[in-house]
Length: 282
Image 1 (cartoon, rainbow, N blue to C red):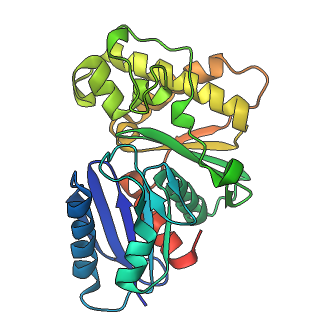
Image 2: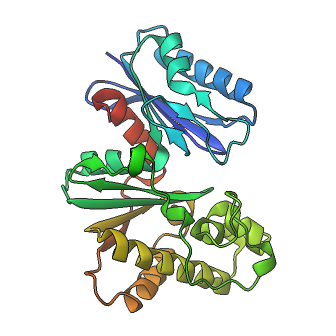
């Protein structure tokens, strides 16, 4: 039995095939095509290459929201040509196996929760990458809002710092989202350069805004632990986490602060989660 995990991001696709114990046999990386037609062909080519003609027993997919996780219909915000795509049905018809799809941050949160075996009752995973989002695990299950909707912590409003207000705009269309201030796309839009070229002062501004966002999430979710993943978190690491934690703690008075860490699984958290749900379901 072989299982496929797919982490479909706005700029890259990570994919792997694993055995029933979740051990990765082979892994691939591809750039995410802009068009839906090209994207579906890349997914088909990836699975063909990974499976080498063997039968696939299950597929797990992590992808940006919004989406309907039960019907598997996806409309990832950072892939504007992917709208109302019945990806679950397309993949099940093509590969004749169960397909599980959820928002990438839910998949990453569930995967990290299951794989670390730490059993925190309230586990919050946040990713800061091309965009910014999160997944909340409550008593071992993904927390969902009314009608199964995915909560969007990246789109809360905060008491922010931003010297270049003219460039502040979120891809959801609102001007004051946390994602617009600290994500990769947000950083490029505000500062006019990639994250690796930010000055220390600019990074301090990003850390302050992250700290304010963490503060809001702590008082609302009261999590036991917050784990940070995504390219921005891994690139900056403790130099982002520690000042953000300082700002968070300065503004928390009534709720016990959580453990705050960088995800132990690096860039592969969502991919490992996708493999896990391919094997174990959601």
